[in-house]
Image (cartoon, rainbow, N blue to C red; front, side, top):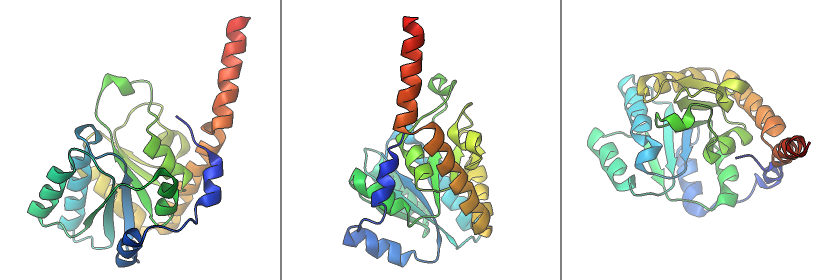
Length: 213
């Protein structure tokens, strides 16, 4: 997977009223966003556990915004209710063209990976590239080798299912927003240079020409 850099031209696009209401309510907080499917494979329990860790540490400045739909969403909402977490907000799925405009209002992207041999050589989730293109530092639970977050120094990587580590990473970023923004810009520069559609197409062209030789 790669990125279409031209999407940045529309990053100021107007968001739906319901999203704007939530963003206004969260204004001033350090918003950690997850934007994607809500399924078992997405390990969102790790994100919710990180929110619980922040709450237990009386970290009131970090808010978790979970955007999307999926079969596991009702269970996750019930968990948040049972845990009485006030720092987690769920909103419905939005159209792809509104993802970057939404991310532009957030402060960090979060993602939790499933530990699987599939990731033994690297990862390329679409949501990860969206976060990085938007200039967000990423806190990722899942220390797969050859991952863009580590390669770019564009965020913080902790072990699989390490909710405590994810919470600590977010608290560190929230405590130093200049550092967070600098990490986010490193991530954007990295994916723009090495994961743009044009760059990936050139790499494929080189590989095909070598094969023909």
